Image (tube, rainbow, N blue to C red):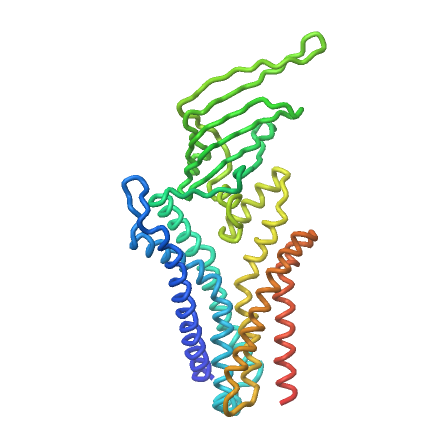
Amino acid sequence: MKTLRNLIYRDVISAIGFVVMAFLAMFFFFDLLDEMGDVGRQFGDVTYSVWHALLAVSLGLPNHLYELLPIAVLIGSIFVMARFAQSSEYTIMRTSGLGPWLALRTMLTLGAGFVVLTVLVGDYLAPAAERMALVARAQYLGETSTAGSTGAWLKEKNSEGNTLAINVRAVRADGALSEVRVFEFDKQGRMVLRIGAQTGQVHEDANLWALNNANVARFDYASTAGAETAQLSREVLPILEWPTSITSEMLVAAVHKPDRMPTLELFQFIQHLNANDQSAQKYEIEFWRKVFYPLSCLVMVVLALPFAYLHFRSGGIAGYVFGGVMAGISFFLLNNVFGYAGNLQNWPPMLTAAAPGLIYSMLSLGAFAWLVIRR
């Protein structure tokens, strides 16, 4: 059995590796064409060159790898299983003792390895590479991340129980901020503090923001003869160290799509939103999607296994592979549809993220059982 398992592992991993390399080469080419429009641009004393473009495109490959791994697992597995069936190799394996459940366990073990690889790429390699790419583009092109015309809005509560509304027009991956505004409201809903700064920097190790040339306006309220009056005081500080628990990752999450965040940071951001009475439905759905997304590799190998029980001796393999690929693409389309529908209809986030995988797993196991029983 060890020889048969090694044969299946070797062929499937080789096929998946070939598919991954082909897809990455294609995305590398298209991304490089997109970057060529910025080649020659001048930012300060730096000219954006072809080497800078190659660096930016290369740093984007881990994110493409994360997105492509499940579909590559499906294509590679279907191709190998169909080829085994076409050449009658799988029939020989079955006569040698490779029963249906042993074959299923073998494929699930292989899929589990790709689950681990997907987690490592999605939670560690891809976020780190994308952060480096954002820093590089900010350095060479002066690009910042913005969220529409008003920037990113966040809310938190301070130690006194007052509510803080924070607006940041743009943020860079290195924590540099642009056009920062902070509004503090007391428990009666009155504004007690307003801070405005053109630039700033997030210092996550000290849980504070350093705001440059901060304009600080304080409102002191007093009741006189039954009427409430407010006294305004202003000051300008060269550097204001403002304590906050909001990290640069949270700001980037508010600006970008949450699917680019590591799972742990996304969970922490959800906790922050819930603690400050903000809607976290979209982020909770994305969190559970990131939890279940690596498990789709298991769905893909189970979906590919029934192809080994088909019988076709000459031709037809391309058609079966194409049909399997279409089934895999439909899985990802359904996954996205459930995400949008769950966000609109307020479905339970975990069920919304898990439903496509459960549906296709049952269909795959049903097809596998039907083919085994029929044969």
